[in-house]
Image 1 (cartoon, rainbow, N blue to C red):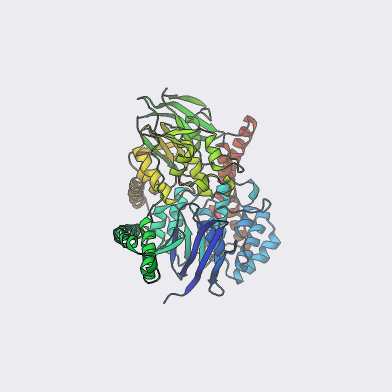
Image 2: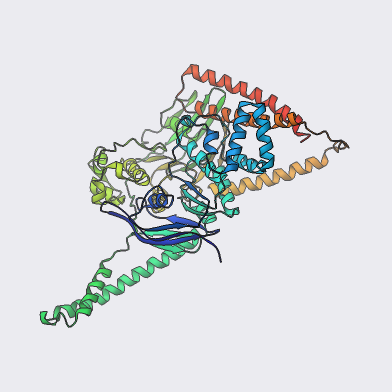
Length: 623
């Protein structure tokens, strides 16, 4: 029998009159990987914060196994500005992690005396393997610039630092709140494999349905303040949830038929017989409640009319863009077709958002131009969101844009009716924006984009913080949208459902046009990689034999071993600095002098990395 790690009993939480969940009971066992699903505003993040001890419940209890090592990744983690990335990554009470943090700090400061003392402790406490695994996690999450201050990082970089911090401590149970947000596709696929192959137990909130399906073997759903559990992955959950809802609809229909008979009986009853048949009267009211209960999934109805769009959409003619030594586009040519739905994928920092901003006119190309059709009306959904006034009511924020919204069938809705289509009840519409959850704010932002009736949607990371119900309906809307769309997303499931083909940004102005969705591209790439590996093996076989191995292998001295380790850290830090500079150069916010200065620094880093790599190769030959 698997050991119980977590037990939640009769948990209840409300904010004022808003009941999030009531009498929720569940447990997490050893090696169990559980996904938590609920609509935005239903209390997913609140539940995670209660389990992590960051917030209190109104009733019920949370019990962990004694001595259990627990890790918690917040949806929006916060660190003080002063610590370095290294200090934040190794922020832990675990003695081995603390020792590694001291050793890395000594390497960074090149303190030979301290390095010698710490190396002895690393040997005695067998911390080298632990450090190697920690560095592997950091490198997979592209965290290399250890000396950078937390205050200089973006929100996405801080999320990756926090995720690394959780994984490095090797907890037995992890609570993950939207772990895939701000990760590029390579990172997501690595994390997916890491969690699947490990013995870690987890409770996870995520909108990434492929991730959920491949990692989790157990699904918990909070629906109308109640909890439902499904012992399987996301695919199994979809099947069983459909069965549950179908059964509920059938029960409601049966209750309606019985209600008509009971109503006839109730009308025939004299007042004096009220006490004699009280059980039947009570049963009538129970039936009435069942019959009136609506199994409304809260679909976000997005049938917004798109304005007419002509045959000419846009043409990219010889477009070039670079920031210093970093190339984003180089003589890029592309003709966008009518009704085309294009996906853009690529690692962070390869220029995806820069490309979009050039298209909509926020950034000017260095060469070439975009020729936009006269009828094109952009609707731009930015990953940065919109700066709502938190002191405004939801309905007032939308009324600032328009008083009425025209739907696809030329029906006109008031702002209040339109918001209701987006799951904002009348009570919720008159709430202050500051009281909305992060997902509800993103949904409100999506509402403000679509209500302008665009005919060309440009969506930059639209899936972040939206719940799965909203994503399902947004996908259906995009599939039937009578206009054009460009979608930048790391959500593989979303991309597979809505795009016709993809542009893959490989970096250094290398852009690949692939005629299919993301999963088809991955399958093609894996096949191409296998073929290339076979070619490399055959080439190696055809090469003349290598020189015979030395009978006596030189051993590194203590000082050379320390130099080798210092070189690893220095090369990693330089590469991270180069990556950070390239990202900054792509921001479009630097002055010409700053662009030149940072470009020169990148050139200097490339030279330094080359020299240090040569020395590292020389020393590692004897390691």
